[in-house]
Length: 140
Image 1 (tube, rainbow, N blue to C red):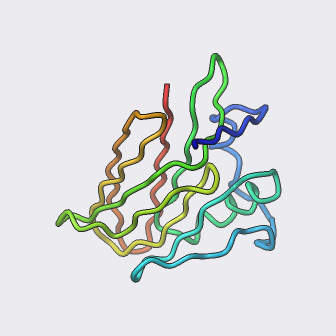
Image 2: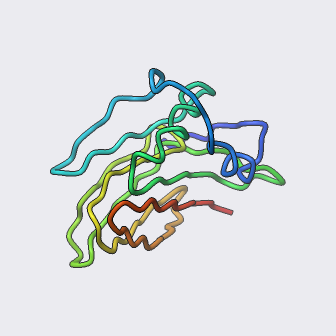
Image 3: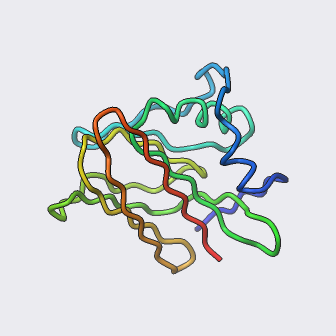
């Protein structure tokens, strides 16, 4: 079952927020590992959301998931995500526990596929050494 998490602020405000946050990572969900890829997913509740945003800089790829409902964006959770490398090999397959997914990927080109309410969205990400890429998935 897909979850929708309603917040009163817009997705745009959420994307701008985060720079300069001085939040301890104490409210972070636990780091998980799949193969040699570390990732964390969550962001439910204000404290956890703030911690996830503050931790983005420590991950080469960050993703946020939302659904447009009327004039608002509602964060989503329970979203299946598959990341494949340039050779088509799956490097991460998970389901989000909140509106954020942070992943430590080595340099390379990746295809990110995510599905919500039966609608698939695909993004490309090119990670270079020391870079950070942000991908937004917003379903209409």
